[in-house]
View 1 (cartoon, rainbow, N blue to C red):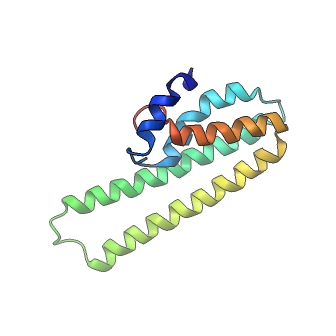
View 2 (cartoon, rainbow, N blue to C red):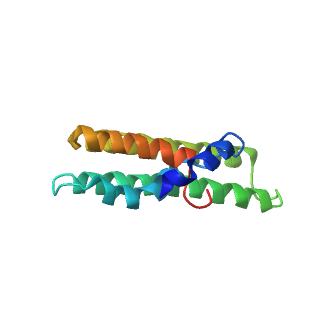
View 3 (tube, rainbow, N blue to C red):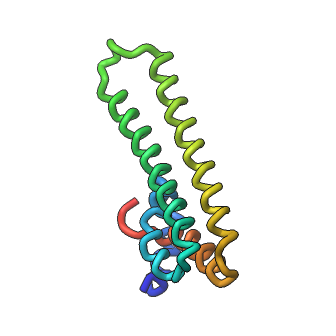
Length: 135
C-alpha cells in the first residue's frame, strides 16, 4: 500500500526534485481509475483526461528529445533563432497540452461524487509527494 512508505517518502520529497510532475500523475492514473470506481457516465471523462495527461507528458518528452539533439549538434547546422524557436515552440505545445489537460480534469471533476473528488485530490498530491517508479 502506498501509505506505508509515506514517512520515508516525505523525508526524501524535500531533497529530490521531481523531473516532471505530470509524469508522476500519469503513473498514478491506472490505479486511481480502479480506486475511483467510476460509473459508466464517468469512465469516458476519465479516459479523456488520462489521454490528455499522456499527450502532455509526450509534449515534455518531445522537448527533452529536441534539447538532447541540440546538445549533441556540433553547432554548424543550427542558427540561434532556430534553437530558440524550437525551445519556444516546444514550450507552447506543452502549455497548450497542459491547459487542455486541466480542462479535461475540470470536466471530470464536476462529474465525480464528493468522495471521488476527495480521493482524486489526495492521489494527485500523493503522486507528487510519493511518485511511483523513477521520475
